[in-house]
Structure formats: C-alpha cells, structure tokens
Image (cartoon, rainbow, N blue to C red):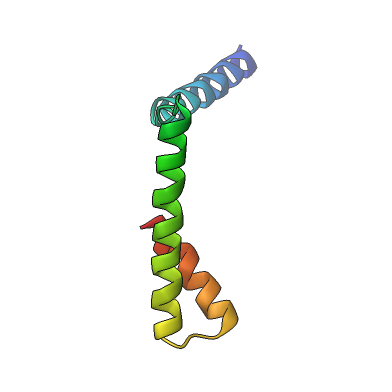
Length: 76
C-alpha cells in the first residue's frame, strides 16, 4: 500500500512538472510563404550582421572577441 502511494505520488509530481514545462513553450514563429518575404527577411538579417561586424571592427576586437560580439549583437 505504502509502495503504491509513493509510486503514484512520484508519477503525479513528474506529470505536473512536465505539464508546466510544456505549457510555457512559445509557439513557433510564423512561416514566410512567398519568395519575396523570404528575400526581405534574409536581406534584413544580412544588414544586421554587417552592422554588427562593422561595430566589432571599430572596437578593434581580436578575432575570437569579434566573433563572440557579432553573435550576441545579432541576437539583440
């Protein structure tokens, strides 16, 4: 009896934790449909990366620091 109660409570805790984790996930971003939308998004991403690279060069960072800076800059 005690063993079944322990097993049941363990399963209940696991499922409640899993349910909370799954409910907090974000929905996937909307997919781009037309080639024009895809090209526009790609152009924006390339411009943003180029700006970040330019900033990193202006700060005269080393190669690895520049790479890390660009990675974090693009995420902003």
